[in-house]
Amino acid sequence: MGYTDAPDGWWREFVSAVPARTAKLAVVRADGSPHVAPVWVDLDGDHVVFMTSADTLKGKAILRDGRVCLCWDDERPPFAFVTLAGTTMVSTDPDELLRWGTRIGGRYMGADRADEYGRRNAVPPEMVVRVTPTKITAKVDVAN
Image (spheres, rainbow, N blue to C red):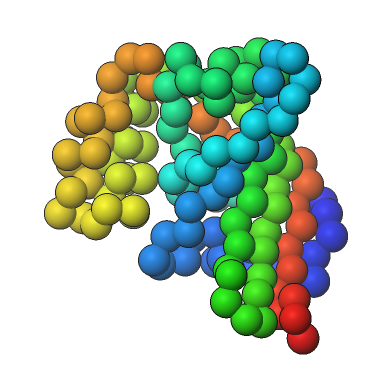
């Protein structure tokens, strides 16, 4: 699927590590210029799942053109990173919004605050974004 200099499946462990790493999401603006923003994510098998509002620049870009790229990195020597390009599917189903809002909120803020974040994020115009990878690049021990 893509270049990797890491053990098979390593990218999933890296992306789902605790404490949670924030992904950087890249999309293309309507005028063709790039935009990058941090997002909280979780994995569902090989799919990356995050939430955003349909009213944000990210949301509008995803609804217009479902291609995205995500990047996670470890800034500590010897350094590591994963980049994942893919296509998106979105959902505004209230049950999915609550389920993923709670799950992702708990991952980043802790189990004791998961319900709070789930309820806060399970409202329109939020949407669940599911990314199907088309290319994954993973590199471990960059400085070695």
